[in-house]
Length: 441
Image (cartoon, rainbow, N blue to C red; front, side, top):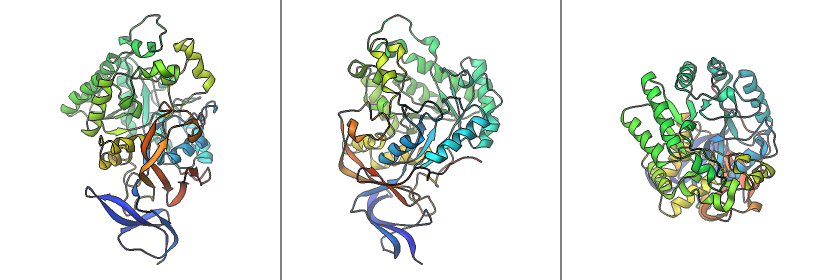
């Protein structure tokens, strides 16, 4: 039988060792991983580079159907493919917020017309949308998120009573409960408008107190929780304590929390403003150790760009600038640079950006795996290829990154989605609208 595609001369991590293999693909699925070649309609030369599963970024903000000046599903998934990401899951804090099945289905329709890669969507609920979790899951939400700090009342659950009601509602839906855990009652007030004021006003105690409150509720109610964007040593210590008690909890962190400090705000001002804020070097190191030691389960970009004119307001008054930064196309190069430096193993990278995120949302082994029967989502990485983080080299609509000026050692050379080559040689070669919706329905 002639298959659709053979990707030759690759190195693949098997049982902890890099071995030479070919990947055989037919009808968008992996049908073999073999030392031997097969007759195929198409052949692609891997040239001895490393193949890993396509990255799964479960925390992006592509802004559809909000204002699309900063990003939309077309530009966001375009950038994702450039960064070796083949699956994304988009957050619900858009306009309108995705707190009803109607809003969810409308957002799905928009994304299906634009996406280069496969995608999922979250629903969101809060105190003003309690009771909607089941209908959101039936519409296809891979998870449901609430925010302890949000401009959208439909997505906000702050008090303990409200959090309990939200968690119980999500438990009926049978999908993961995701939370932005920051307790702003612990925030420090003041009128300071220094470049680091945003971080100083929302110290680590905001995260640690919030995680403790959420996880004690989860432990009492026997509900699984996923903590988004863990950013501090204090929050990590609370997480570890509750894990030791057998609490059902997973957590993610982001590249900027592993490597940057609030001093970055002195250099880039509002462009380094993010929620929760950047912390200190000790927090970076604790989180990286936590990721390597599996106390933190996965990494996600929290890709959240804003128009330049909105960010620029923060130079005069930090509070006037929105929080968030791009990251979907730099996450994998960032991880490969850590591999080059000996800070993470290749198996760690595959676990935190491929396997664990796919497992959390019930997508594994369809996604996140190089295995017979899995979707042929394959990222071929060159560990020696330099990823230069420059405005002109970025495909996100803002052409921006908090890592501007850095050179990451190691980057994607080619990306396949369901057996179709979508990125190669610095260019995305596929067309928008080919991405498939991944949902519970």
